[in-house]
Amino acid sequence: MDKGYNVKADKLRNYTIIARLDDAIPLQTDEWQHVDQILNQISEFVPISMLNSVTESIIAYADDQARRGYLLGQEDLVKELKQKASRIA
Image 1 (spheres, helix red, strand yellow):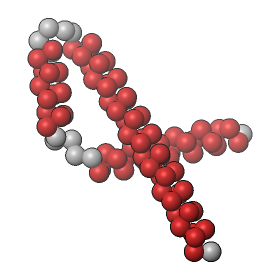
Image 2 (cartoon, one colour; image 1 turned 90 degrees about the vertical axis):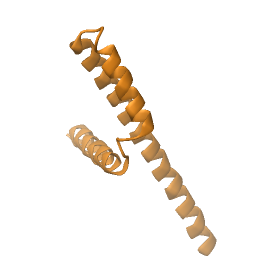
Image 3 (tube, rainbow, N blue to C red; image 1 turned 135 degrees about the horizontal axis):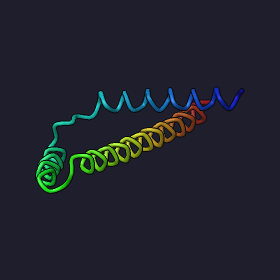
Image 4 (cartoon, one colour; image 1 turned 120 degrees about the vertical axis):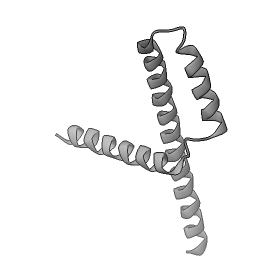
């Protein structure tokens, strides 16, 4: 039963992180516009289902990388705060 709780808690935490990143990261950037243009060009030559699959894979990868970066940043912040607290104490 604890394992089920941990899975649910992890899913909720991941959702919360992704939602926060989505709010904080602008989608209309030069990089994204370039990707969007390439996807539009590719759509002329490949089936839409394949293009959707590639797009979903890119999104999943980007979300995972952003989530990992966020978690690493939080871990670094905790370490830094602990170091500052130990200096004060």
